[in-house]
Image 1 (spheres, rainbow, N blue to C red):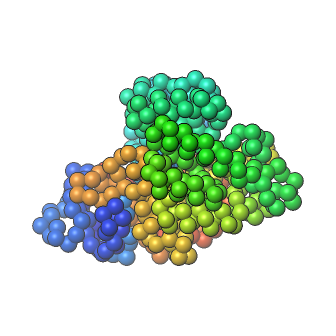
Image 2: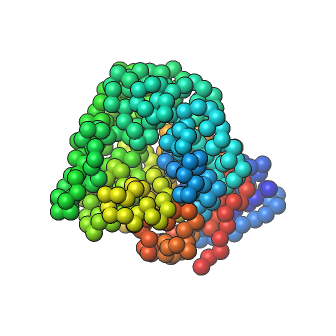
Image 3: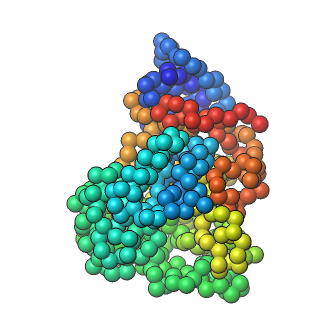
Length: 427
């Protein structure tokens, strides 16, 4: 379809664009951005006056639960939620069942995502076989199958020699290593931040150094091997400082932060709220402030959903027995826009962290509205108010501490390759 979108505020940080103008789309790609496209013959026109148009959101971390945990979610259900949230690309870790340590599992995920047709799904292959932290996976075969990087997901690679060899092996194939930075001995058997709230509740705490020690080790290995490393969902201020210093010295490292770490703190666990059981745990107010500063400075180049849908029973047990994670695809954009309204970020900074930043980390040509770029687009109403509740959530998992919260900013259209895959009417 040849489509003209008229009168939207177009925000494209990759090209320094923030203006009210038109966007024309043909053959699934951006034809032009600007009023100069007056001769463009459109088959359909959309009047987007009052709306904001951005590149489709690229989410660096989302568990789709398929294969292996379809009672929590499926590729079809979670890509539907992604489309409703303006997310056009999802990246899933390798800790499915079976684990993504063979090309066959990666190909299965790609095939089912293509069949859904609602969002692009990228896959991280396993760093070690069965995520055992000991035996290296066949990274070359995983890359040939389409994997854009490798990760050991939430499982530790305790042996530093194994991690060094894994980094060197990944580097030979040009693969980025995605790291969950957590010292397994300091975190073992612990659930919340090692602070006053955990002490008051009688819950064993994970100290900040569990993260910073792990970050320090990986940075030293990067310095030796030259491997590109991405730190997933950082949670502490000191870790942000360490990544900033490494970047200033030219090391090929990047990092992201989960949206809930920018909004919540350990205080939100205060009533044993299982929906606030996340890993890494919610930290202190100072950490939250420094994470926000890291986004503003571009040190944390991406904000991710860290989407982990669960069935109802997974969050109904006593806190120590609940499963960690938040269902976040439905609310990612609106929660980030709330931080813009609170003057924590400019709209351009927020959009960059949702589009250009994660696309660059994955090494994909998305997150931009450059002429010729694939027409993955999100159009949202910045002023529409809505309530996050069971009725408004499209993810199969409804586990979120933000349920019942009034949000501002709602997706009206999502385009994938120029095709409208989600459309809603104003409330």
